[in-house]
Image (cartoon, rainbow, N blue to C red; front, top):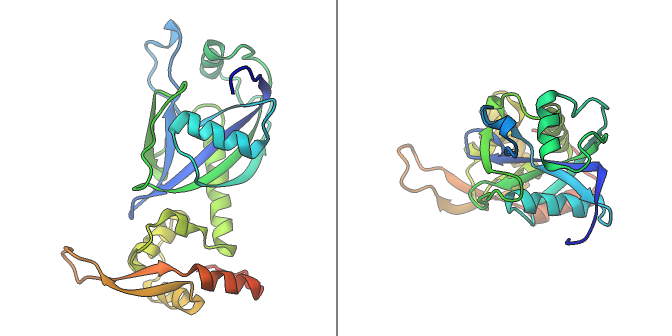
Length: 248
């Protein structure tokens, strides 16, 4: 992208969700400090995001920015909204940071939000560009973020929950084989509520989008549970039949 000019008015912010079999996490970056004014300020985390280039479309920009800041690429991404409040970047702390890194820090910026689902065990984020670090934080433990990123996170979580009703995209957060207990934990983490075990298992088996494997857990303190896998073929058959309700 050398020699290509940044668009000072349009940015991309990425909400990356991960799951550790217990909690839903979001990937945050320490946006760094580039001026002596920041020496005594505590770290404030932000969602991975940046301005797009004049020559790239939104999807290209999202993939490039995510790779630039975290090293992650070739992952599921879904656009979930645009955010254009004229005051979204006007706090004093945000303006100081913008003045330290951008040539036109006072320009109004509209951001396009994308959410991504990644298997935490498969991807190790590596901070680069202006990001000083990249860390996974449980969604329920996120404190005040830079700019309007708390709002973006809430909207992304709402979009994820809505998508789960019509497409079983949550399987992007799981390894190829998983237990029904782990699958239930995923749904509980995303929806932030307990789900009745018997009803959950009855509904997931009725849908037929998971298939039972011969293998069971090993080296666990409790009774080993059988592994399952996502049945993509059955899912595609349901779509062809016009089935759209994957609510569990």
